[in-house]
Every structure is written in structure tokens, then in C-alpha cells.
Image (cartoon, rainbow, N blue to C red; front, side, top):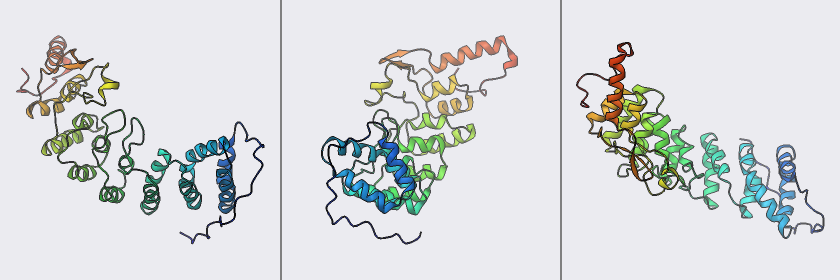
Length: 308
């Protein structure tokens, strides 16, 4: 990276611009966005500094808009602008944290360290349905290790659902990343990890992930979304065990592996706190009847499946 020019000098009081000049009712975001993208950074810093020091509602509106522009500043490497906002206590937008984590490793560390220093909690969820920043870093093993060393917790869920960084990793990411997170999550059992493993795109990988989770003693037979947080939003819907979903989606090898590990084929789904719908065994009986009527469908599970 090239040496940065010295930051603008704010030792002088900002010009007291007339307060009776209205801000544009619409388009302030677009005006500031264009300034950030096109104008010299030191000039934009001076303009924003004056904007932040205007009294009353105009400055409050500007703060909200500038908060939403933080991700742009990070992606365009406008460090002085970002520093100016943070030093003036502009609220950190969660999308800025995402943008920081998506940068190359060294830049990601720099920006995340800055955001953490100015008050962003490393274990704060990014949204109602998205876990903390660790979930964004999963494609970068060095960044994952750095965040873990700084106290990132793979088991922290998002605001409304028990979806964790570890859940995301189990569902879509490399086994080495999952193993690294499991070493920091050995004694916790949230996140519905086996449900996430079942949904991996590759069925063979899903089976290997199930084996890995079982070795770490993660639950294999829990009904999804029954924790106190998730049930508020998912309780009215049918929630089931991994074995139920494996049978419903005809992932028979996964279903057989679950049964061999001790999953209950008679465990019912739940809706509104009550047992609901078919059990895994009933699905298999139904599938067997269909197979008897149409042998061309082929066998659904291996012999000696333990479900009969």
C-alpha cells in the first residue's frame, strides 16, 4: 500500500454555515456517495466534518446516512473518512463489519480492529437472521484464527434464530474450518448442526460431516427450532428431527447412519408445541408401500436398516 497523506487538520472550528439552508429532502445519500467515490478524500473529510457539526435534525439525518455509507468507505479504502465517522461516534453499520471481513486478510484485520476499538462487539449478530462476523470470515482460515484468538465464539447465534457461525460452516464450508471451530465449541450443543450437515450439497460430505459431529458428541436427534429464541418465530411451523428430514428428502444413507447412531424413528415432528404429522418410520412404511406397487422405483434403504 502507498503511504497515506496526513489526515485533514480539524484544529480550526468548522465554518458556521447558515442553519436556515435546508438539506435536500431526498438524495443526500446519493450526494454523499458521489462525493466519497469521486472527490479527494481530504476534501470530503472537511465537508463531512462540517456536516456532522451542524446543529439539530440535519446533523442527525446525516449521521444515519453516513452510517449506511461506512461499507462503501471500507470497500474503497477510505480509511481517513471511516476514522472521522468513528471519532465522531457515528453508529457502526453491521454492513460495515461485513465489508471489513470480506477484505483481504491484512486489510480485514486493520478495519475490524478499528471497528472493535470503536465499540463493535465481536460476538454481536449482524442481523436478526445472521450470526456474528465470524460467519463472514469462514472463507479465510487466517482471519478465522485471528477472530478466534480475539474471542469470537462459534456458538453465538443471531437475534431471532439459533443459527451460529458453526452452523454456517457445517452447512457449506471446508472440513478443516469446521474442525477448527469445533475445537472452540466442544462443550456447547446449540446450532442444530446435524440439520445443517444434512443440507450439504454433496451427500458423501454430509455423511462425513455427521460422523465428525458425532465424534464431538453433538446432538443427532433434536427437533429443530425448539430453543427459547427460535420457537417464537418458528413455533407455528412444522419442526422436525434430522431423521425425519432425511426420510422426507429420500436421503436414505443419511437416515440409515442416523438410526445406527441412535436416532429415534418414532420421534414426532412438532407444531405449536404439539406432536404433528408423520414420524420417520411412517414415512418409510409409506415409501415401502409405494415401492411394492412400483418395483421400478428401486430400494430405498439397504437391508437390515433397523427401522422395521
